[in-house]
Length: 520
Ligand code: HEM
Image 1 (cartoon, rainbow, N blue to C red):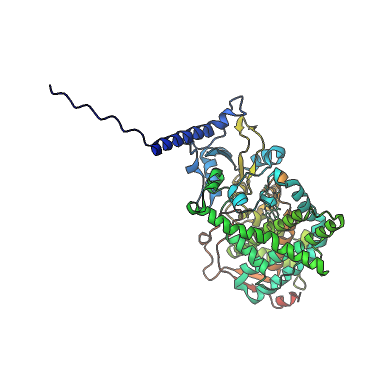
Image 2 (tube, helix red, strand yellow):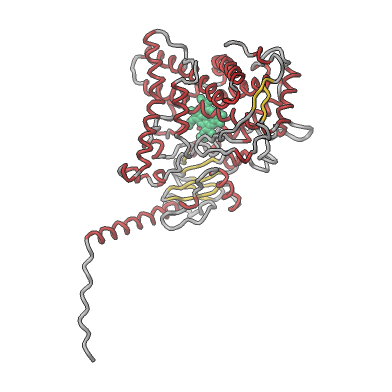
């Protein structure tokens, strides 16, 4: 038998290959510990996690995370599939809990507010885009309570009624005139009205033209915020934020948007400070805070005031304008609802004057339209994410500390058990009849929960009511010939979900209606 030649020794592993293997092993260990963490830490009784799709090794539920539009429906579908209103997902070490019923939201976010009211880290929007100053996204350790106290004080019901209602009436009158002159541009007019009210009460700035720089800035911010906070990969893998910009395009986008965040906070604030120095500032939230601050004279609160002005400006205008646009769409799709509203207005107020806040109690059907507007299409369908500060137990399930909590407001407002035929715009559901009680007020979910509940809700309620009631009093809204097909309108992702453009016809509904709209 011939001898086989001795085999060549295996080639020595190159340095690169060895390094790659070590990194891969370290990553696998990291992934494994991240994957196991919720079971190991703070879970002495080894409670199970809430129902949800089976996680995969290392990446967890990355592929199950809803994306690509209407994420609220995908979360609701997961809730149906797993027959549970709370759904647990784990993505690269981050725990996510989707809450899909008001019942669970009430038990967790309202009743256990001390633990369930923080905000998640959100590296994309807060650290890279620079929105960490914004109360809406602020954690407890980022100055939440001082910011919240100021905004709450300036938007409590007494202040809204006395100081802000006159501004709302004035700007609604401008809205009516704009709708009369250029009805097809209704969407711009609604944005302008919502922005103008906010600019006046926050900074004492009167919006006089469509080209107002602050309204345009707000619109630019809106155009660049069509992603749901927490949806970026860097939010679940914060380490990615250290990648250089040339291989991480999201960092270049974030840098551009950072500029908008700075402008939104700085520009109107500097305007008020200059006006105060010149002695011609109008009374507003920011001017009175600055005057108070100059009396105490320590200069330390300027940043706080700047932040509070910026948050009201960024949180208040877009939300209100979106609710009003949904209302216009509903009116053009449901002519019978509109006819009944017109009849109620003609009977109670007549056609001789514009209605006022005092008329509200006498107009139950209009009140029901407002509620149905907030229910039919949630303005913030996935709310703003909450975060748990410590581990908790719910219905025998273990909820890890630092879980990102997504309240599925849309699912709560479309719960078949609570609101029959939820896709239909039906204000009657809010009018009690015989022994049938009214459906629950959607405000219990639409404005969020617990310690983070929207501080602008009284203001939003008043401004939306006065706008829709005045529009209905003088105008009739119709879809274009052939009507609008509901399926043609799409709602965006993002914190605020706006409908895509649609056409409709808005005309005065009786002779002389235009004379009710006075010069402002
Ligand atoms: C239709 C109108 C509006 C809707 C549907 C709405 C909805 C919401 C929701 C769902 C939240 C999150 C609550 C939570 O985390 O549980 C929120 C927070 C907030 N809203 Fe509104 N909002 C509206 C109008 C306004 C207005 C007019 C203002 C102006 C004052 C405002 C200021 C804020 C602020 C500052 C926060 C953050 C509160 C915090 O994190 O502590 N909102 N809003």
